[in-house]
Amino acid sequence: MNNEINSLEDIKAIRKIMEESTRFLSLSGLSGVLAGIAALAGALIAWLFIDDTWSLMVVAAAVLVLSLSVAFWLSVKKAKREGKHFWTPVSRKMLVHLFIPLVTGGILALVFLCQGNMQLIVPVFLIFYGLALVNAAKYTLGEIFYLGILEIITGLVLTIFPGWWLIGWSFGFGILHVVYGLVMYGKYGR
Image (cartoon, rainbow, N blue to C red):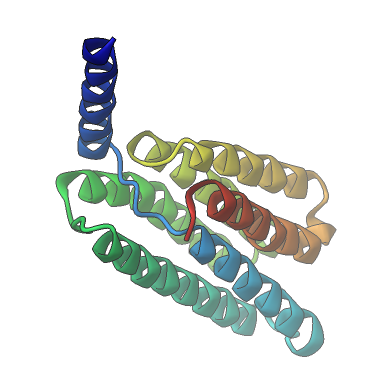
């Protein structure tokens, strides 16, 4: 009986080591909540104060930089608290797979902005952000995959209803992140 218990503990330890070597597990649920709040605040600022596209792009960029900075800071903090390193081969792979679609979508959105195709900018942001999350999910927690799918669906709906861009922004970048962050916080802590 004792050997069976020891064998199960050994298998659990081996599984944990293998998972940590192939997955980046230091994502913070709190960063998802804060990113969602930042997106909702950006949407409120856009709704109340902004009437030109370039100012809207500045607000969108500010929300993105703030959200990524907070996510990075909280993830580093979580990794240190758990006695892990943040910058590992797995975290580098995850970031590369995240940023390729993210940067591609950003460039495409700038092209649409310069061409005057304003109605496609928010859907492009949501779709390519969703693709980035789906792409990075293989190197981190599986829940990221489902958030990515919901972002893609939200972006596709906005291509059909482009007048709903502010609602889509608020839902995709705001509400979905808050819900995702709360789920992650409840499931994995911080």
